[in-house]
Length: 222
Length: 222
Image (cartoon, rainbow over the protein chains, first blue to last red):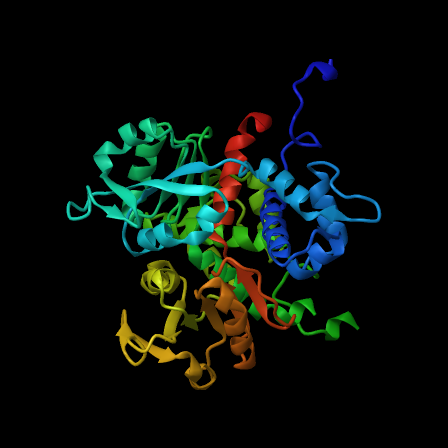
C-alpha cells in the first residue's frame, strides 16, 4: 500500500525538473539577501520580481516541495531559507575535495561563495612537487596519488575538478574509484561517469553563449 | 500580413526556453568533440547518449531552430556546428570586457574555453594602481574610470563582472551606461539591470548545490 512507503522529502512524486532545482538556489540567494537587509517576510511577487520570474512561477516551483506560505503574511524568510537548504542538502556542511591548483583551482580555493553555502574545501590535490605538502589558503595540498586515502579518511563525498581538459577523465575515474558521489567539473570537456555518480559540468563559455544568444535574439522576444 | 514580417532565425515563433538554449551549447561541445575525433556525421541517439538526454529530446530541442537531419545519414557534424553557432551568435568573434582582476578575474583571463567559442577578452579593468597600465596575459589593464571610453572605442557589447560582491551593482550600472548589452556576473550577488540589458548570473556555489541536491535525492529517483 502507498501508506507503507517511506515518506519522500518531496511533496510531489517523480523527479523534479533540473531547472526548478536551479531556481531554488536563486530563491535561496534572494532570501538570504532579504534577511541581510532586515526583511522577515516576503511574497512570491517580491521574490520573483528581483529574479525576473512571475509570482506564479515562484509558487509553482516551491509547490514541488511543500506548502511554505502563510495567508496574509507570505513567506517567512528564515523558515523558507531553512526549508530550501534542507531540500538542497545544504542544511549540513559538505567537505569537498578540489583537484587541480592552476589558476582556476586557486581562484576556486579563494572563492568565498562556497563556504557561505556550506561547502568547505578540506583537501586539494595536484601533481606539482613544489606545492604538494604545503597549504594554500590554509587548505592542505596532497599528491594525486593520495586521493583515495584522503577521501576515505575525511569522508569526502563531493569533488571539484579544475585540471586541464586532457586530464579530466582520468581524474574523474580516480574520484569514482575513491567513492566520491558527486563531481563538479570545470574542465571544458564532457566526462563519462557511471550513472550512480552525479555530476555537473561547468563550462564557463556556455554562460557567455547564453548571453550572446540573448543579445542576438533580443529583437525576437520583444 | 504574416508574409511581410522579416524572417526570424527561429523556426518556431515565441521565446525559446532557456534550458533549450543551454542544451544547444552542450550539443555544440559534443559535436566539436566528435569532429576532433574524426567523425563527420552523428545521430540524435549518439548526441543524446553522451549528454544523458534521450534522442527524442535532442530532436525536439533542435526542431526549435529548423530541420538539420538527413534521412539515412543523421546530422552532418560541421553543418550542425555552423548552424548552432549562428543560432547562439558565436559564428562571429565577440570582444569582451573583464572587470575585476582578483583571483577569479585572473583565472578567467587565462581560461581558454572562452576564446575557443569566439569570446575574446580585449580589455580588463581594475582600480589597483599597481596593475593599471600593464598587460596581464597580453590583455591591457585599464582603470575603471576609462570604462566608457574603452568600451566605446573597442565596440564592446559583452562584459564579465568579477569584482567583490559589494562592488558588483556599481560596476553593472557603469557598464549599462557605457552601452554594454550583455553582462555575465560572477559576483555572488543579484544585480538589477534595465530589461534591455541581458545578464546571466554565475554563482559557482549554485552548481555545488545542484550536485548536493542530486546526491541527497539520489534514492528518490531510482
